[in-house]
Length: 123
Length: 389
Image 1 (cartoon, rainbow over the protein chains, first blue to last red):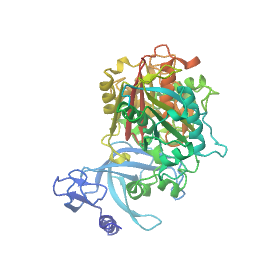
Image 2 (cartoon, chains in turn red, green):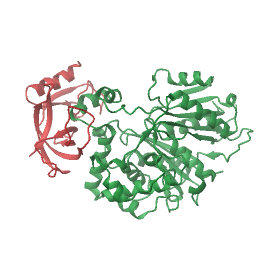
Image 3 (spheres, rainbow over the protein chains, first blue to last red):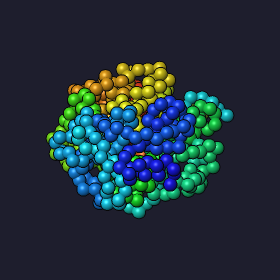
Image 4 (tube, one colour):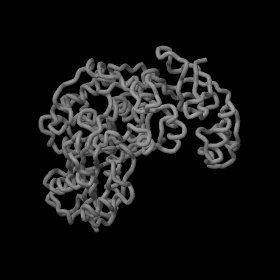
């Protein structure tokens, strides 16, 4: 596995989400890469994130072809305060409560395969 | 070598089918090729260029060579155009460039394939059509492929602009009215109402089953020729006065904007090349994988201000009888989407309308058409302006 993927996973496994930060253009980068996609330089540092974000959009999946997922569940795009957008599930949230713009907080969980996974819950 | 204006000289389209009856993608493409040279009044030996969209079940490896070998063509130029649902429109744009550069006289653009209903329905098959970034950072959350991507866009549009499910459903209703007048359409038996659409099963909220494209098997083809050649032209040749493209992202989390699509730039570039504006366009063929795709395309191609697409589609008759005929063949929502990239049917239908050969669904004003091909999750955009001599 690429070094950057391993670092991202190891940090999650230890209970934190760290993202790459480009020292040249001073922006956070998601998803992890070897090189900054904005300035194409390779001086990427790692920094922990605040874990705060808002729901940019969401969908409630009613029909899923993947047997390990049990509809209905919330599949969302979350804007982190660090300026990156990521796909994630929103959990611990009733389906009639979810809305665009809702503040959420990072939670790291373990699914069946035991890999640590960042998801979000309502603040 | 003749260098002159490129025109669409021939079109063909097979009847879309839910079951290909054991035929393969190459079999379908060959039938479309045989039909299109007949329509163009050409023989096989006239074809010296080949552009193909990707296969569905065959290997991608040297795909243009596989197609050329089956058809026993020896083109001077060939390529595969892989831009998802924009591939077909982009093929026509590339054919124009090749013909106008004097490289080819008659360029065959082929698109189609066999639909395998399991293609998105197992983890392995899902992964086969995902980028590594999607596998690593989206698949763990249970995305439903393109369905969930477009649902995220629809939800955001509703939150930003107050767009309603009823307004989105109207698009499917008008396109069904068009399909009722198209003998080729997969769904041409029964009219739809807004209530019918909203009563269909919610697949990924807010999208209902009848707002989602129906993949099928089929093929369509276009020949782009040099207008200066001494040919019989059995049908009026259709010029391609403009095209424009725009590309911003692959997967939806990394789109610059959910509700503003790269169609805006693609359409602007196409209008600029053609020297026209949205007010000059008589009919539109807009890639319709979902109802929300059509709504955003209408906004971004300049037919209404951003955010007013919901009101616009509710107040505008989008049928072949209306003021802005849209997807007069029924679109992919009612006609079916042949394999991965059904966009060639949008090109073929616009040409039928501009030729005046659309039968009972012929539009009244048919001087200028806008065609859009959209791939990925509003990711790849290719617009064509098609006109008349």
